[in-house]
Each structure stands twice: as C-alpha cells, then as structure tokens.
Length: 439
Image 1 (cartoon, rainbow, N blue to C red):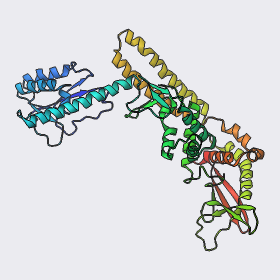
Image 2: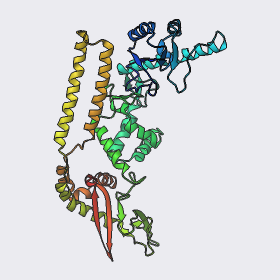
Image 3: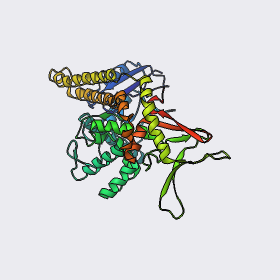
Image 4: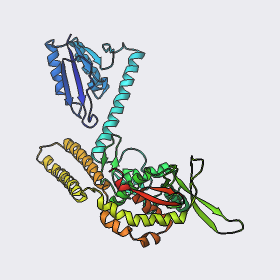
C-alpha cells in the first residue's frame, strides 16, 4: 500500500522546520506553502492523484493542517472518506484516524480541534506582528510604556534605568549599581533583574521575540550603542573574576594570587592596640602549606603593581599579535550597508508587483535580524586603539590620581591575574594581561 504525505508550511511560523515524516515510508509528498487557508493547490493535486488509486493512505503532521476551521477540516476528511483514503498522523504506531460517532467523544474531538486552531490563529497573529516589528504581547519593560505598535520611553521611570546603566559603566559593578538605584530612587531590584536590564535588547532600541531573532531600531533606546558595547565588554570581563570581587572596595581584590600556594590574596584590616590607625594587608585566603605564606602590606603590593604595569604593558602591547581592527570594522560596516540597501529596495519590488506585501515583510524581517547580528559583532570589537591607550596608562601619575573605585575599574580592564613570587624575604610580581590570555 502506497503512502502519500501532505504538509502545510506557514512561513511565518515554520522557519527552519525539519521534516516531520522522518522514519515513515513516504512514497510521495504534497506540500502547500501558504499563510491563507484558501491557497491549497497541492491538496487539490493530492485528490486528483487519489482518484487514480495512486495511493490509499495519507500521512499528515497534525489534524489542524487540513483547515483553519472545524468545518474545513470536516470537509477534507469527507473528501478522503469518499475516495476510500485512510488518514494517519505522524506519530509512532499511529492508527488510521477516524472521527468518533456523534456523542460525547465526538464533542471532545471537536473541542480539542477548536482549541488547537485558536492557538494557531494566535500564533499567526503574533507572527504577523513580528513582521511589522510590533512589540511582543505582555507588559512593557520597566522604563517603557506600550503604545499601539511600539514601545515609548516612560519619562517617569526611564531616568532610573538610565542612571543604573551609568553607574555600571562608571564602576563596572552590577551589585553596586543595584544598591545605587535602591538608595537613590527607592527602586528595589535583584541582581538578576539588573543583569537582565544590562543584557536586554529592549533597552538598546531592539526587540527580541520568542524565536530568538533580534530586530534593531524598533523604538527609542535608553542605552546607546557605544554604551551597550561597553556594557557587554564589562560583563565579559567580570565573568572572568572570582565571585563578588567586581564590586569590592579595594582595587586588588580578586587579582593577586600567590605563586607558591596558588591561594588568592584577600585584603584584611588590622589595628594596633590602643591606636586608632588601621593597617591594610594582603593575606592568602587558604594557604595549604605548614609554614603558611605571610601577609604583605596592601600599599606596597599596590605600588609594585603600578610599577609593573608601567614597565610591562607597553612591551606586551608591542609584542602582541593584535588583529587589524580597522579592516574588520570596514568589512562588517560594508555588510551592514549592503543589507540596508536590500531593505530599501523592497518597497519598490512591491510596487512593481515582483513581491507581494507579505513576502516583502517576511524578507525585511529576516534582513533586519541579519543586520542585528552584524551590528552585534561590530559592537564586540574593542572601541579604542590598544597601542595608543597603553602609552597613557603607562604613566605612574595616571594611576595615582585615580580613586580606589576608578583604579579597580582600570585594573580589571587590563589585568587578568597578578602572580606574587616569593624568594626568602623578597617578593616580586608577574602580571598576566587580558589581551594576551588566548595567545
């Protein structure tokens, strides 16, 4: 007995769909690609072929593929029944599908079909909204309010979000920015919520839908492109650090490791008896040796770190095989420009009736998603010339003029780890820079 398969693909919903009939001995496939229920030329061809007894079974993905209403599904089931064709649904061990006789079970089948078709119509509606770059369903994110077809900046709450971003950009501390908005505005958010704010495409003027596609420039951004790129770099940098050191009050926290015992050195405060003065030390947190490694004055290690940076950073940059950022930026910018040119040509193709409106909207949606990916790659590139900035930060006075929070920010920008080597009563530092970690 020959087996035919019938498949309906909706380009709004079935992007990248794998064959649902894998493992079935299908002899011929009939496939309609449509977003409208009355366009089913392949179904009509299937019925014509069935009249010549080319096959006696039809395989479908789901019952809803036969029509967008209960009446349409019933009509097509009747057409198959009149031809003596058995209907199968692509499930393991599926038996021929038949409607139950009138009664409670038939009513249950009809109700299930109606519910599934309603879900399908809702999905199609959301898909059409995506093509028009309308916001997804649900409440607008904090800092925005919903209008008819896009997000609008909420002037009462957007300053809170903007100030949160500025605090993170200034100090590179997520928990510090969370504490700041709670203290300044009384807005209580968790660290995980703050992380979602930093990574959400919505605050960057883009929309991300459930299929993972990001469409840029759909509404006014609270986080500008240059700021967004810096946020991404800071988040990547912080992921390399030990937990809860990105917001530590001391700039060396989480960076210094003892080369002898491989223990991180953490700052501790100590006071002398009957004296108000405090002393700050770096002490191994978990030295496994019997003769434990001793503590060092924090200020001495800090001064030695600054000296090592000023001496080693220019040499490391000069000897590093750095990528040609200008050529990479030109390549990505050119690719974005070409996609933009295609996008501007679509209205003319619709006017000349080369494309219909629905196909043009679908093509524009895919082009915008591709542009978003290219813009994301462009944003990941370092924004400055490393050789030029190395000359600036190699001046000792640059580091001495910074506050401890500012110094913490720049240390983490350049330094991956500081190894402390001891030789009897002497010690020295070896710095591993971030831009050399993959070489």
